[in-house]
Amino acid sequence: MKRYLIFAAIGPFIGGFLLLLATTYQSGYWTETNGGEVVKLFVVFGKSLQYNYLFGIVPAMMFGAIDDILMHVRRITPVVRMLILGVVGFFAAALMYASHGSESGVAQFILYGLVGLVPAVISSWVAHKYAEEPQQPATSVQH
Image (cartoon, rainbow, N blue to C red; front, side):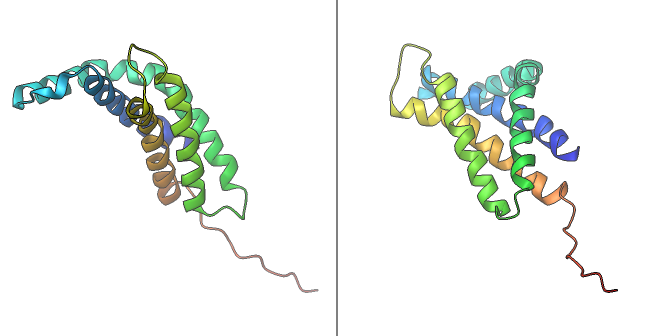
């Protein structure tokens, strides 16, 4: 249960912030940046945080389920599990967001792919550190 709470708390927060950064970069907002513009970015992020959780909770829970399934496969180490989730998150977000809008290209594909990759990998890492119970060594039963 902790795993799903970790994914639900971290995923929409980081993913929403990265999505905001990607869209502001794509719109040309970062051509002349000063302190006031950065403050505006964080104000917009604060105002849109509720919507990040509203629309991001279901995908985050789906990635939590994938992580939970992969955790039960003994041959998959935590690092490989994080990489699998990162690749799935990258392509899911890139295919979902990159095809929208007037511009398309490699930069847009990579920017929007990072929106899925980074929260998936960070959530999987935090879940590995704090939600997994240590595996007990198999003991042989002697009669």
